[in-house]
Length: 595
Ligand SMILES: *[C@@H]1O[C@H](CO)[C@@H](O)[C@H](O)[C@H]1NC(C)=O
Ligand SMILES: *[C@@H]1O[C@H](CO)[C@@H](O)[C@H](O)[C@H]1NC(C)=O
Ligand SMILES: *[C@@H]1O[C@H](CO)[C@@H](O)[C@H](O)[C@H]1NC(C)=O
Ligand SMILES: *[C@@H]1O[C@H](CO)[C@@H](O)[C@H](O)[C@H]1NC(C)=O
Image 1 (cartoon, helix red, strand yellow):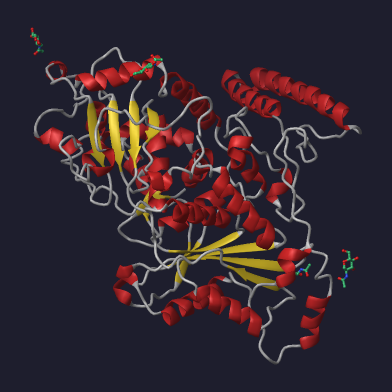
Image 2 (spheres, rainbow, N blue to C red):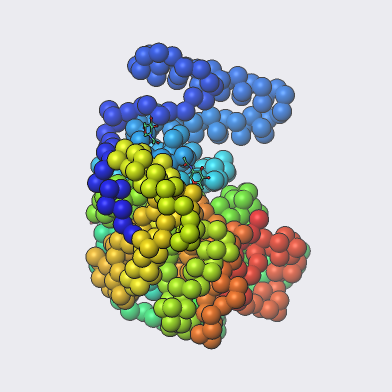
């Protein structure tokens, strides 16, 4: 039920935009504290520098050069974080992790971007309940190098103009400094976010620049993620009709291969004949279209030989609705780099999504208004995301029972008391301090679903029965749009707002195979309890499973025999791949990252 006093009663937490409103909640890197604010700030800075220098010397002399350079990287990211300012005030609501929220997420986000044009970028850290994985120093290096490259090569630069000229001329050739991957929209919002993240990681791995072509329905969803340059593809891009190309246009990789307009490059340095073969290859085309959607038309993309061929192509157009990151792990070209970037495999999407996908002010306004009205005072926030697919539909009763059985099995939603329980106990719970707004034992359940049915039932449950343990329960659902309408901007904005609200949860229940739920879990940094899809329209048993990894599932991984990918057997440590890329909890034909 909605607790009317929960939203209106308390003072909404204040989050300040400007740098002036600063500084109460900073970290004390070397401990200690000084009395006055300005003094404290300067003193703290000096102390931190001192600590870091000492650490650096220690690392250099005692641990050797490599550790010293690692410490140096951490130090420089720390200092740049300080210069960017730990500025936003710690909100007064009960987020445990928010207490010491570092708004740049441990250096994941570059400092110095405009706060007002994209408020979520600086404020989101204060809302997330969890931040389980610090970015690795190698990831930070890679991101800063990427940002520099993006600034050099972005639309509006001379280098971009040169690359576009090359494209107009029809042939890739040497001498062009910038190479690109152009992301194209395909499928619903969750799918798009996952393929954007995948495309960005691919750009990181291949020294390319990610540009996106956003249709009107996505025009006001995401902020520019990179400092000092745009990621939007200019409208005069020379390839026509980008949104209408479909899965298999003329320039798709596999078609070009079949027509021998491009040739996979066999890497065999010991065999001089193969070098000659390489020299005799046709010049690569100016652009190649990669169809990596659920049909996986260009699955050879995931072979090393083919990656070497694609490396010579200036422009790659990426058409995908998948989170294909786990499938890059078995490509020899990328395996080692992925290990260094993500020492914890399950942190990949979590970190990349928080780096890349910042909602615009229009969306962020919805997120924060809703949060402050209904969720801020809760001491525990549970997100429940419910999606029913046509191929796995069951009755509302069946799915509702599945949710309840799951919740009892995994102890997610607060349990209710039976009629015989002591009423006095409950009376106390509601009388005491319900007006202080402090939360106490207040649990907010946020339902994200296209339909109102589950919200209505769950709310009724906590109206008709009290929750055990003096817990007050509020049940909320921001929207119920009845059906997905990806072609409408306002629909997408509301959907994106809900994904972010899910991202602020302490715990999550999500629907299996739903990319919406995958993105919510990744943003939250939470391993969700996943409701199993009702394959064959049969209520699944067990009703749900607790995820072992917070990574999204790649629902359509490439199925490649060793004959197709020659080097796969030889170069990659197959045991390691088998350990880290395994079948998804919710779909046995999908794969995902595990640690
Ligand atoms: C790039 O080319 C466009 C026209 O194609 C031109 O208007 C613009 O000035 C050029 N920019 C640079 C930096 O060369
Ligand atoms: C490689 O090609 C060059 C000329 O194209 C030829 O002279 C040379 O003998 C070839 N080498 C091998 C090992 O085939
Ligand atoms: C109500 O809250 C106040 C302060 O927040 C506290 O001192 C008091 O003990 C609380 N009363 C009950 C009945 O919990
Ligand atoms: C809140 O509820 C939990 C579980 O019912 C209980 O263990 C805990 O003591 C309660 N906390 C407060 C402050 O009442």
